[in-house]
Length: 440
Length: 134
Image 1 (cartoon, chains in turn orange, red):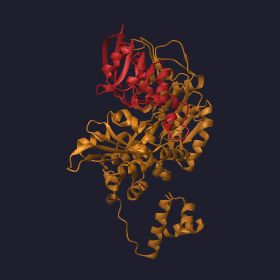
Image 2 (cartoon, helix red, strand yellow):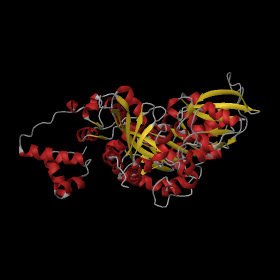
Image 3 (tube, chains in turn purple, green):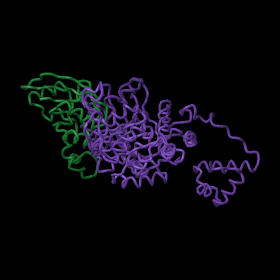
Image 4 (cartoon, helix red, strand yellow):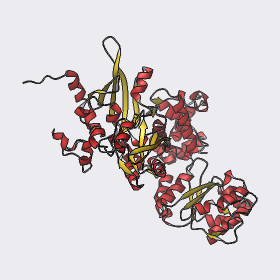
């Protein structure tokens, strides 16, 4: 006997995306072959069941795409989620939904299509691995050199000084050092020395004994005690007072400290990592930072470049933040337009990576499409606020504009610019001199 | 004995990893003594595992759960009965009487999971195990 085939079923089974339909009671009415493969559940087991009992998606309970489609009468396209398949594996997927209507236009249920993103995710992770190191993303040569030395620095017990402008990722480096060290299973305690007044900072760092001052009714362990056998990260170290500098010097030299009101010293088995956004050499010269403490903390020095000096990282970082906010804010934004990318690459970022992160978060709030455009960027970045281009009036002007644009594209790297312009770097340098272009 | 079940709309939450509420039922002499519902922190699975273990739960009945979360809960000393679904009151009633049979409340496809965890099915496709030959 020849079996009758339902043409709709044949079509659905021939596509690579998972597709299922539900009736108004959320019971599955059809389940295609790809849905079987992705979820690991057979069609015969799925039909008639509640969709959440089959689909096991991260958004079923609190952010069901199909429910939203029913409530708003709007299709959902490419919402990110994960499902847990029959083997307990998390499968990243993107979900799209629509309402199913009968010939009279009455809603009779919904259809959900979902795409297995495992392979794409794996490829993305492979690519990201190439340019990332313990949550720090970069392909800048200075940063890659830092990535290279971090494992050896982490293995040592030496005090580390991390320098960099605000928002350059000093704490991420400190955490990477901790996670790469043998202390990784012990606490990592971060203290912002600039956020507390000096008197509070001392008790915060070293703790106090009951009766040390009026409100000290019980002993309170300090951050050094909390970080025992682990790592303590002292950010904005340049902001501590001369009195506290002396106490810190003693901890680093003798590996002991005294909590306020204590009569005995406590051993400090702690790896110390410090950071500053100020120029400590200058502070030492001006006398506001102790020279002996400076030499104690300046055992290994890591200098993080500001974002304006590693502009090649901007596209990578934008991708990273888009993915993160897409998951956090449940918005199907997948990329950025070339025009918006150009605006972001041309910005100087006084707030560094944190500023870029805030810009992308701002864009996520405003963006109603799947791609961030210039209109979604903060006001101060929009192209109309950028200085209008002047039209070159002479050959020299034209040449100057041409060379300047190329230099900016290559972050003022003369060798790369010369290669792009097809000239030797000495010729480029000569032309720059002739046209009055200065790298500053 | 304290039994916990992630709850959603009067039923077992579909996914333990993202469940928002936890029903904790105290059972003594085959009868329910008390029940409370607590919010599960919307944090990563290690924080969620710590939260559940701090509730001194002896037994957790849940729906779908990732391997990582399952391992984490097991190392916290919580006995786990995953891949269940259905009405919460029916499950508690059955459990109190010692009659919680897998077949009654097991999620569709749940019976295949045990054989599947030994490895992928022969044709390399995810999720079917011996049932591919059906």
